[in-house]
Length: 152
Image (tube, rainbow, N blue to C red; front, side, top):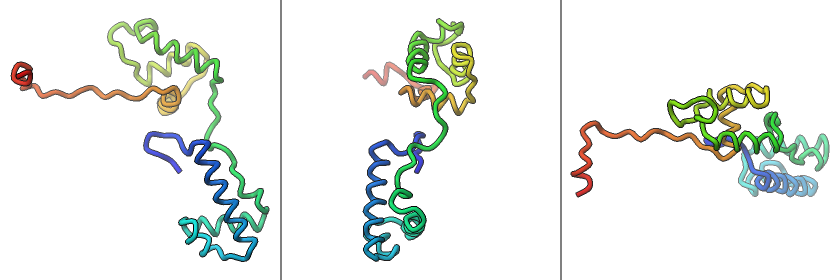
């Protein structure tokens, strides 16, 4: 399951889903049909059937979580901490004095310079999100805006 802000299930949510599948396996072992399991756990019939087939083929172990999906981060915790520190120093400290905004391209160049690892722009976006950085949108203001009238 994916979410708009990126990422997937948390470790706690993965454990919760795994427990649900284990409970379904217990019902399968007692002879409860997959459609009934789907109804009880409020999941789709397709999910319940997939669980049933996995349980038949490999037992309860086949329903265990396989961990987080996706690629493993190419930067270890030490490198992530260093990248965060360098980002916090600001763009000017890294040769971008014209403005104080980190773009994805700039962050990708910084990562390549520091660690000799090249990320795509989307990969940098995921990396920054992992570090707790979020995109900031510029504030759009009307050209006709009258600050004095707004003050009053």
